[in-house]
Length: 473
Ligand code: CO
Image (cartoon, rainbow, N blue to C red; front, side):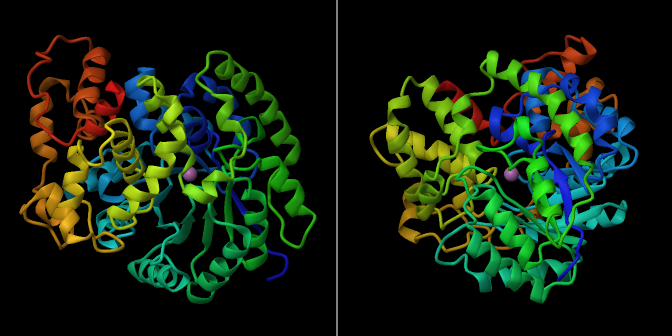
């Protein structure tokens, strides 16, 4: 184990601002520093995927594909990484395999090297199509275990998953602790156990939410982890990752070293400080997100979800019910068979919990996504859902038990036709495929046409319901 190089993925361009301030960092704020970041010695810059795509078109009026190309131009030496939700891609439903294939092809063409691919339920069948596409187009496929805590999510369960992923052809495997609930001693046991059964590199992703992240990383490194994710200090801590500089300096004092240039890291931190202050001043960044909250260890709620719950309650003038909602989250999760709280499950469970509390009656209102979930459309639940509960929501609707995408016909050409003259490129079609309403409105603005906007809205009944419903509350 001695003298290893620990590889670092920098998250400031994706997860850090996604977790701290609902993914609102603009491309303009990123580009001037990319060339310097390219010289630091990072394994990769996580800069795309997750909610960046959605936030770009919904709130920033930016083309996410442009952002990717601009970053790529300025970072010729460092791998660019994205977070991909398996068959969900970056949207909120499952797509047909041909859309998955095209999305991966275009992502690689525009600059992505490393795909961190996960499925919210850890149903590996939902990783198959994207894995196949990443291999086909020459990318690095990092298959991802969503870490969560429940009676079924034990070390043997995770070992079994990691073995399956390696066998499927993963180039590396990531333990994704989106909630920051992986505590140091558990991390040590888990990393050790996984390193015993896999030969591909092992990455660990955690959040500083509960205050354990540096301890967790140190233990994981000692136990043999190969790669970790950190965020440059102005956008570190709280619901984000621990600071890159701190980890680089501390790890370098031990047996295992990073390749990071600490002097450059300081410059990068200096660059991002006034940017952070700007977002604090315009209140996109809530200082509440920047502290540590060991409650995460009790409620097992990821940081991004905490900030979403808070903003949903704010819109409903009900922030005083925050603690009640936090207590309702694990109850909803248990009802749903203990899904890991990661997108889209975190939004679905969170929204249901908010509904249950604000309606003063559990499951009086049930979003369509939850119904689809109970119909098996998202894949296999970690623990079977109680039949009585399922029937109380979806009655006698048929339930899918094989790979959900087997039930989705090829749809790229149909989507392209639907988009009509706004489909200037395959990238545009993909933007529309992922976000039918918001994507189309974005493209209309982009190309300044006045195509009939009322038509074809709501063709996809699952689109954005969670977000729309929550936005109303
Ligand atoms: Co994360």
